[in-house]
Image 1 (cartoon, rainbow, N blue to C red):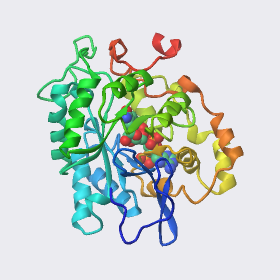
Image 2: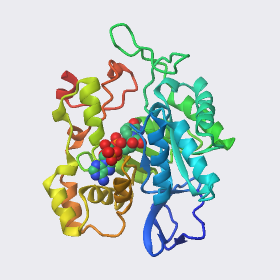
Image 3: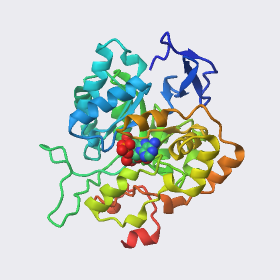
Length: 366
Ligand SMILES: NC(=O)c1ccc[n+]([C@@H]2O[C@H](COP(=O)([O-])OP(=O)(O)OC[C@H]3O[C@@H](n4cnc5c(N)ncnc54)[C@H](OP(=O)(O)O)[C@@H]3O)[C@@H](O)[C@H]2O)c1
């Protein structure tokens, strides 16, 4: 990503993990972190796009609106089924002369059905075609486990009893090697992981020529991932927080589609402490929750289709949470009990040898 456009002025240093701040008309609109291998700048706020699915007449205007507002980082995945529409919006924005591909940071992910060395290149090339782009800024292995792939639909094969057919031959180091090859050929700029645990990351690091640059995991006030973040800091891995607002959209989805208990979802936007801190600063709960993450050098990728909320989620750099505010928010951490995304909706997934989470007993029993 090239942030050297005329309207943007870099103010602070560019060393790794030091946020770089950019101003437009004297308004601070973007901060970035620098990735250690390529020195690429990754904006600390990106547009999440899970549940931004068909119809494309919602996706394209949302992405275009986000770009107009100043978003330069978009997070998608093969599994979100929206790469084509996102690519169309991005290309429309570029063709209209408002910016260039180099101004953007696009993340996408290798799906669970492609988690084998022999499939990596096929998916990278397919995803580039869908996005209608020459390269991906950041390519993540979406999840550490794998399912057998239906070759026509490119979806998991599901047994008659509803269990997902596991591919237990998963070898992360072999997958990583092919990702490195794709990087050397210029198809991908940076490599990373998502939903991996510390042991799984270490095993890849032991064998890798290129170390993981980014780890994307669930992270919000109720689930702060303290230990994993320490590990990443020591190893120069940037952490991206998914579900940074506690994923209110996941609740309806998981309750309706997968029959999760509605009680399993923390309403962090509605917590009185968060509201109180927001009122004190004249900001909204969402802005407080996002600022809380970014202030700790965490990248956040909130999703919204509302223009008002897209704007709100970007305007998080013009106030400062005090040490006391930060400490109060840190106390909201419920540890493993705060996790929303355990992936048990893919029936039988916990039996995969690379299932990454140690779940509390009450969750396993469900
Ligand atoms: N790697 C992974 O396995 C993984 C898993 C999950 C998510 N992700 C990524 O992370 C992104 C973010 O996670 P997420 O979408 O689950 O959750 P999220 O960003 O925490 O929450 C999104 C939800 O919050 C609402 N919202 C957005 N801004 C708001 C605001 N300012 N005030 C009140 N409500 C607001 C949105 O509704 P409206 O759209 O109506 O505004 C939407 O329902 C995803 O979109 C995806 O890109 C990755």
